[in-house]
Image (cartoon, rainbow, N blue to C red; front, side):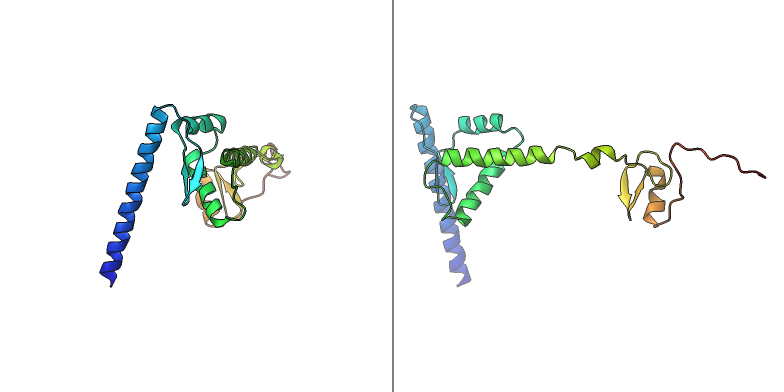
Length: 166
Protein backbone atom coordinates (compact mmCIF):
# COMPACT_ATOMS: atom_id res chain seq x y z
CA UNK A 1 0.00 0.00 0.00
CA UNK A 2 2.77 2.45 0.90
CA UNK A 3 4.54 1.74 -2.38
CA UNK A 4 1.47 2.62 -4.46
CA UNK A 5 1.00 5.84 -2.46
CA UNK A 6 4.60 6.82 -3.22
CA UNK A 7 4.00 6.16 -6.93
CA UNK A 8 0.94 8.44 -6.99
CA UNK A 9 2.82 11.16 -5.13
CA UNK A 10 5.59 10.94 -7.72
CA UNK A 11 3.01 11.06 -10.57
CA UNK A 12 1.43 14.18 -9.01
CA UNK A 13 4.85 15.81 -8.72
CA UNK A 14 5.69 15.04 -12.36
CA UNK A 15 2.34 16.43 -13.55
CA UNK A 16 2.80 19.57 -11.42
CA UNK A 17 6.31 20.15 -12.83
CA UNK A 18 5.12 19.62 -16.40
CA UNK A 19 2.25 22.09 -15.89
CA UNK A 20 4.73 24.67 -14.58
CA UNK A 21 6.97 24.14 -17.62
CA UNK A 22 4.01 24.56 -19.98
CA UNK A 23 2.87 27.69 -18.15
CA UNK A 24 6.39 29.13 -18.36
CA UNK A 25 6.56 28.42 -22.11
CA UNK A 26 3.19 30.12 -22.66
CA UNK A 27 4.38 33.20 -20.74
CA UNK A 28 7.59 33.32 -22.77
CA UNK A 29 5.66 33.14 -26.04
CA UNK A 30 3.26 35.87 -24.92
CA UNK A 31 6.16 38.12 -23.89
CA UNK A 32 7.96 37.40 -27.17
CA UNK A 33 4.95 38.48 -29.23
CA UNK A 34 4.47 41.63 -27.18
CA UNK A 35 1.22 40.60 -25.54
CA UNK A 36 0.88 41.71 -21.98
CA UNK A 37 0.31 38.93 -19.46
CA UNK A 38 -2.31 39.45 -16.82
CA UNK A 39 -1.37 39.05 -13.18
CA UNK A 40 -3.34 36.20 -11.63
CA UNK A 41 -3.48 33.73 -8.79
CA UNK A 42 -4.37 30.06 -9.25
CA UNK A 43 -3.79 26.97 -7.16
CA UNK A 44 -1.73 28.83 -4.57
CA UNK A 45 0.65 30.32 -7.17
CA UNK A 46 1.07 33.69 -8.83
CA UNK A 47 0.69 33.67 -12.60
CA UNK A 48 1.70 36.31 -15.10
CA UNK A 49 4.48 37.84 -12.99
CA UNK A 50 7.07 39.04 -15.48
CA UNK A 51 10.72 39.79 -14.85
CA UNK A 52 10.01 43.46 -15.69
CA UNK A 53 7.31 43.55 -13.04
CA UNK A 54 9.66 42.00 -10.47
CA UNK A 55 12.34 44.57 -11.30
CA UNK A 56 9.82 47.42 -10.99
CA UNK A 57 8.70 46.16 -7.55
CA UNK A 58 12.32 45.75 -6.41
CA UNK A 59 13.10 49.31 -7.49
CA UNK A 60 9.99 50.74 -5.82
CA UNK A 61 10.26 48.74 -2.58
CA UNK A 62 14.00 48.50 -1.96
CA UNK A 63 13.83 47.21 1.63
CA UNK A 64 11.39 44.41 0.76
CA UNK A 65 12.41 40.91 -0.35
CA UNK A 66 9.87 40.66 -3.19
CA UNK A 67 10.09 36.87 -3.76
CA UNK A 68 9.60 36.18 -0.05
CA UNK A 69 6.67 38.60 0.20
CA UNK A 70 5.02 37.07 -2.88
CA UNK A 71 5.10 33.71 -1.07
CA UNK A 72 3.69 35.28 2.11
CA UNK A 73 0.91 36.99 0.15
CA UNK A 74 0.07 33.70 -1.60
CA UNK A 75 -0.06 31.89 1.75
CA UNK A 76 -2.33 34.62 3.13
CA UNK A 77 -4.71 34.30 0.17
CA UNK A 78 -4.83 30.51 0.56
CA UNK A 79 -5.50 30.89 4.30
CA UNK A 80 -8.09 33.65 3.86
CA UNK A 81 -10.00 32.90 0.63
CA UNK A 82 -13.06 34.85 1.79
CA UNK A 83 -10.92 38.02 2.18
CA UNK A 84 -8.83 37.49 -0.95
CA UNK A 85 -9.25 39.99 -3.77
CA UNK A 86 -11.23 38.69 -6.75
CA UNK A 87 -9.74 41.31 -9.06
CA UNK A 88 -7.06 44.03 -8.96
CA UNK A 89 -4.34 41.65 -7.78
CA UNK A 90 -1.67 44.17 -8.77
CA UNK A 91 -3.22 46.72 -6.45
CA UNK A 92 -3.37 44.09 -3.67
CA UNK A 93 0.35 43.29 -4.10
CA UNK A 94 1.39 46.96 -4.25
CA UNK A 95 -0.47 47.58 -1.00
CA UNK A 96 1.14 44.47 0.52
CA UNK A 97 4.64 45.61 -0.48
CA UNK A 98 4.04 49.21 0.65
CA UNK A 99 2.83 48.02 4.07
CA UNK A 100 5.89 45.78 4.45
CA UNK A 101 8.20 48.61 3.38
CA UNK A 102 6.63 50.92 5.98
CA UNK A 103 6.97 48.31 8.75
CA UNK A 104 10.62 47.74 7.91
CA UNK A 105 11.40 51.47 7.77
CA UNK A 106 9.68 52.15 11.12
CA UNK A 107 11.70 49.39 12.80
CA UNK A 108 14.95 50.92 11.55
CA UNK A 109 14.33 54.25 13.32
CA UNK A 110 16.04 54.25 16.72
CA UNK A 111 13.85 55.17 19.66
CA UNK A 112 14.75 58.06 21.94
CA UNK A 113 15.86 55.69 24.71
CA UNK A 114 18.22 53.88 22.31
CA UNK A 115 19.78 57.17 21.24
CA UNK A 116 20.08 58.84 24.66
CA UNK A 117 21.31 55.89 26.74
CA UNK A 118 25.03 55.32 26.43
CA UNK A 119 25.96 51.65 26.53
CA UNK A 120 28.79 51.59 29.04
CA UNK A 121 30.45 48.71 30.86
CA UNK A 122 29.14 48.38 34.44
CA UNK A 123 32.66 47.53 35.66
CA UNK A 124 34.85 50.19 34.07
CA UNK A 125 32.67 52.63 32.10
CA UNK A 126 34.20 51.92 28.69
CA UNK A 127 31.89 51.27 25.72
CA UNK A 128 29.95 48.04 26.27
CA UNK A 129 29.72 45.25 23.70
CA UNK A 130 26.87 43.25 25.26
CA UNK A 131 24.85 42.40 28.32
CA UNK A 132 24.79 39.34 30.61
CA UNK A 133 22.65 38.89 33.73
CA UNK A 134 21.55 42.51 33.45
CA UNK A 135 25.11 43.88 33.49
CA UNK A 136 26.56 45.59 30.44
CA UNK A 137 30.17 44.58 29.85
CA UNK A 138 33.24 45.32 27.74
CA UNK A 139 35.61 42.65 26.43
CA UNK A 140 37.78 42.83 29.53
CA UNK A 141 34.88 42.26 31.95
CA UNK A 142 32.88 39.58 30.07
CA UNK A 143 33.92 36.83 32.53
CA UNK A 144 32.92 38.99 35.52
CA UNK A 145 29.44 39.52 34.08
CA UNK A 146 29.14 35.84 33.21
CA UNK A 147 30.05 34.87 36.80
CA UNK A 148 27.30 37.23 38.02
CA UNK A 149 29.93 39.20 39.94
CA UNK A 150 28.59 42.45 41.40
CA UNK A 151 30.21 45.43 39.65
CA UNK A 152 31.89 47.98 41.89
CA UNK A 153 30.07 51.28 42.18
CA UNK A 154 31.65 54.13 40.29
CA UNK A 155 30.63 57.39 38.75
CA UNK A 156 31.92 57.85 35.23
CA UNK A 157 33.98 61.01 34.78
CA UNK A 158 34.33 61.68 38.52
CA UNK A 159 37.64 61.13 40.25
CA UNK A 160 37.73 60.41 43.96
CA UNK A 161 39.28 62.97 46.29
CA UNK A 162 41.98 61.79 48.63
CA UNK A 163 40.69 60.91 52.08
CA UNK A 164 42.35 62.43 55.14
CA UNK A 165 44.75 60.11 56.86
CA UNK A 166 45.70 58.05 53.86
